Length: 114
Image (cartoon, rainbow, N blue to C red; front, side, top):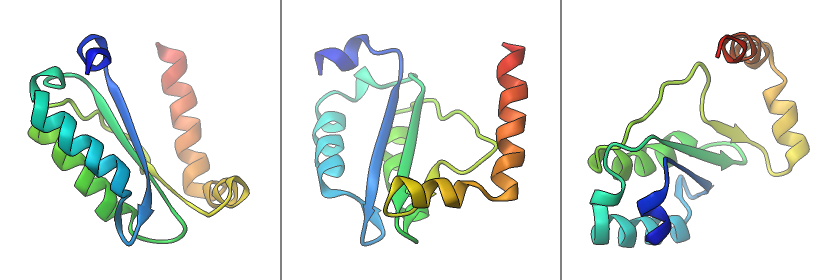
């Protein structure tokens, strides 16, 4: 909790288990947000989920409920904050589609602007 107090923002990531975030991250978030929601208020956050095939949307929804209830800032994105695959190679293959390449180009252009 001491690190949460001084953190500028947070990234929460989880594998998907049975269409939900993993039990470990849910237990940690339950305890952290119950104990000191004020440490998270108005700080930027991002939630990321990884699954073999499905369940990422439900898992992200569950994570984002903690974060929005705590009034954390959820930045927008031009692409989904989820990946699919059981190995890094499968994830890279999944991310190689045309839509993702288009988003990557937009990100590179936007990042050069700052």
